[in-house]
Image (cartoon, rainbow, N blue to C red; front, side, top):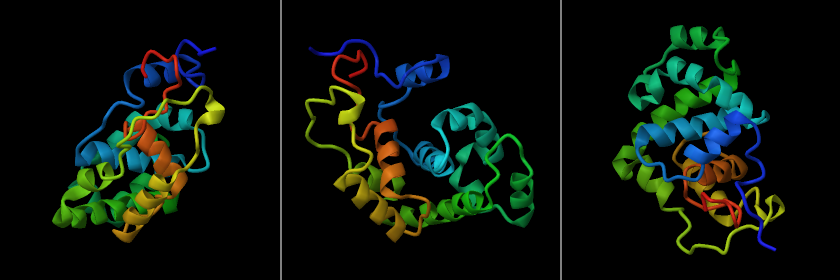
Length: 182
């Protein structure tokens, strides 16, 4: 029997809205991808709902995830971020986000973040997962993407959170069979 209805993880108003309007839809552009990668880094060790609820705070605190603005952050901005209750105040993750912005600037010389990330997109559509148990937490593609990003100087970009980013940004289609968004 093929399941029907949206993906089983989309429970509660915030998750339903995120699922129906955003998750799995193609995301392009340096700013948008930098935001998603940054939020995945902050999510490490936490639930995604925590990040969703703080996303507007993150956007305000990190200059709308404008790469050049974040790359220019210095000690004063780090101190402000470390005291900001609207975001996750992890010194390591804040530092990684600023360092990642600087790495993304350097990536422009090789075609940019969008080109790099999308070079790991699923080229062959799959039949689709029938249940949440069929959805992997990492794949060879996410491992390769994580390696490429780390090789370009980014941090907090492991294969598990990069697979989550690939799902969220539409590089893979992990909507369950029967989900209207599939």
